[in-house]
Amino acid sequence: MILYNVTVNIDASEHVNWLKWMREEHIPEVMNTGCFIESRLSRIQGEEEGGVTFSIMYVSPSQEMYNIYLNEHAQKLQTEHSIRFNGKFAAFRTVLNVIEEFKDVR
Image (cartoon, rainbow, N blue to C red; front, side, top):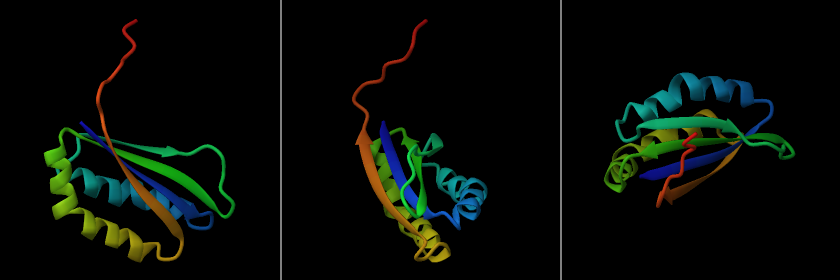
């Protein structure tokens, strides 16, 4: 299982518009690629000066499916984000390989 995390700091003046767009357009488009089985949108606690920071985590069932996303979909989706919010955000991406899961069994 692969966790693909995108951390975005969006300008405070744009964060409401950005959240609406992420919820209604961008995240559904990413999920519609078929490369991910779930996603989570979180606000990171502790404010950065001049912006609001979010994490979008996507869960891919395999490295193969993540590679399909990367090779066939990522550039287009990232470009749409960059054009729409040009100069109003900073982002970085992290890819994690899940080695084991622990769940509450109570």
